[in-house]
Length: 305
Image 1: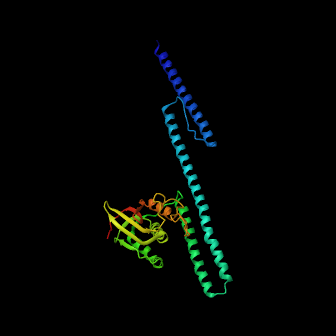
Image 2: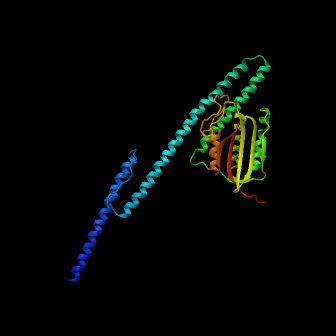
Image 3: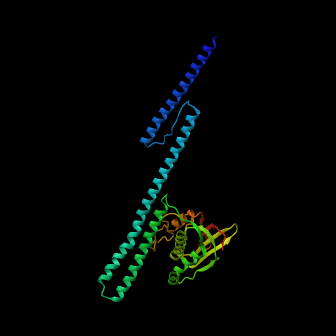
């Protein structure tokens, strides 16, 4: 056979193969485009599917499906967080209503009273209710902030010992009023990578929890332990009939005091847990005899100079 004819036949075969290949690719792209339009315009769990096609198209389909799944998971998580925040605001609005109603009642009593002694007593009660309300609103603000996916802590090398001691000193009068003397065992110059404001909030929440719900003594510790770890512990006695459920204490709105005799947001320990986790630490609650203990574990940094 003439070599020219052979070459022509080969060229025709190659052209036909390439044409078939291009038609197959364009057909697959057209099908994928139709499926993407449907997925984009409808609430569906559908993924892209493609029949017999090139390996490149199949790999592209798999990558697009991975992106679709990731986007759906983000949407689900965003919706869950939105629902959680709405539920938080709704629940706390009921808790806030109690001190607000109380404030109005005592304000009216103060205005109607002719006794200066009674007026002073009502003023003291009103001031306490305002402080309680302010704490609840601050807790709600922090909770919504840390549940925002864009929220980031500014962690840096921090002297945890100094922060714990200064926070404890700020509650001196509270311990005095409760006639409680905390047992303090804090190692000096313990450092870790942490956000100073977040760490203060953690210590404040743990101390307030002990003051509000605890009985008898309060034990507060900050110790170096094996493996270059730090153990922060806050423990307190348990009131009769108010044993907390250690599996639920970090849940939103969990309140161990069944009588709800204290105005409390019920999210303090939930906020504490989230802040500790954002700083790379672990937190746990345990019962030991008649004592409720919260332990926090963090990595220690060696003191430099």
